[in-house]
Length: 145
Image 1 (cartoon, rainbow, N blue to C red):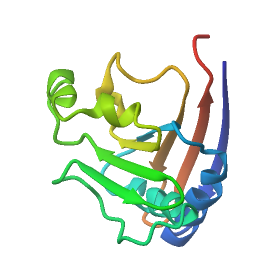
Image 2: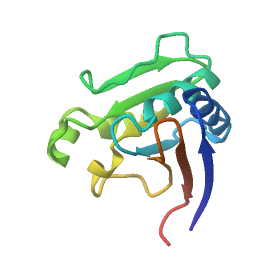
Image 3: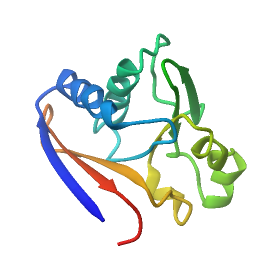
Image 4: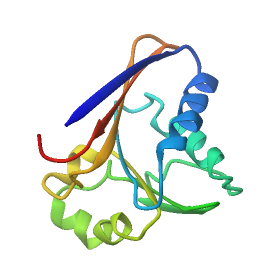
């Protein structure tokens, strides 16, 4: 079963706030797939989530490091699959272990998880409307339809 909510963000600050508000839904073991073009605002949304969990580290896109681990009221695993070529490569970095580690797992470019994405998850899709406007669609997926 799925349910979707949509929001319009007019700035990076609003995208950050939507991420912070969204974090109230997350618990240990939550999985969030983030979808959107480069520069859409996925990392800004993640910064808001991390703020809600009182992460003190600087939150950056893990494009080159692939995984950033943050420590707050819950562990937050921020994974960026942009540079990953296939599922075997993704499994090679231990993404399945992060998914099962009991923290909040935020995965950018989650469409690359092909077949290993958790059935119960949130999907956050951020679409560029114009230079400063984004449409954010948050879908809660409870498992098989």
